[in-house]
Image (cartoon, rainbow, N blue to C red; front, side, top):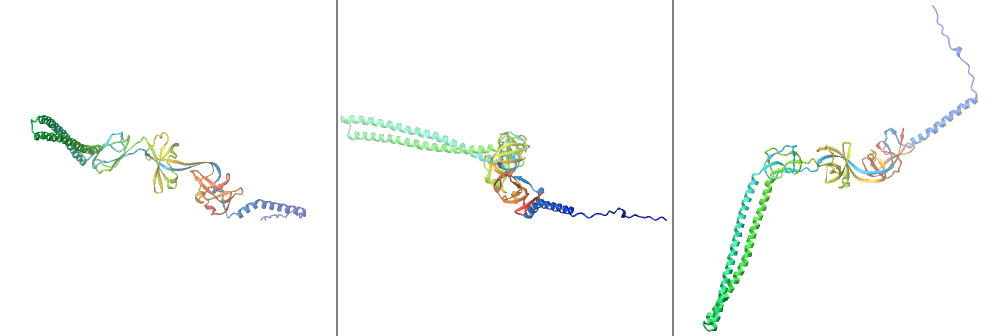
Length: 428
């Protein structure tokens, strides 16, 4: 049997000499220098960390620089395309309706759309027409009677005038006879009385004729006014009967039908709507907070596809419904093609423009800081809490009115993570 022998390492050992004192001092000095340099590099960071109550990684923050630029104050909302002209048709009387068109049918202005059969209105028209005919006959009869009465009055005046002339002639004859004593004094005086009687009869006949003419004119005018009033009443009923034939007020298409064929409708019941497709507007709901800033004539922009079309604010509702104000925007130039009823479009209303002001991009710091707090980052990566003032706001930026200067770097992301600390260390 063979025995395996393993050699040790004693042959490889070397005896070292102790280092000299000079070389040892060099190593110690080098170590001290390294420690001092490390402290010099680390100390600022340690001081910043010690002076900050919290720290946040830089990649979790959004930073922006305060700049000086022009700011357009605006509001962007989702608008709905509506027809600028969309009249609704109402039943002018109670009755049975017969529809002549279907929903979605293209119609022209004046085209019949429906007919309402109203027996009550038709009967009332016939009654009033009969009354007008009766009053017209009475007016004609009164006019004939007026002429006849005027003729009688003139006849009476003529007869009394003839009697007066005869009485004057008898008085002259009696006067001549009395001078030659051919007649008695009594007969002479009687001719004077007859003459005075004839004169009075003639004067009264003329006065009666004048007064009678005025009365006849008044009665004739009364009859005429009655006929005129009844004629206007009949004309109004004729208009109402004509409105039973419902016609399209504009060129367009028929909207939704609110009643069924041959259905009974009541007065002022909505029947249908006609939509004019040649003129569209944008109906937009604006938050209540902007209500006081809206004004008629403000410029607007409507985004159709990738194209911006200028518009004008033409209507602002005086009511606030569900914390929103209803507005209407009309296209300022040629209306874009391809619009559809109820189509959703982004609408931007330009309320104010400020030139050469300090601005910051909008960010969550406005909500989390109540628009009064911001954190400014210095060159040592320390964010300092600062009170600020915010003015006008746009979709992309806000106006800084106090607390910040141009060129400063500001945290515009949420500052909730800073926990209201006065200083925050921003780590790389």
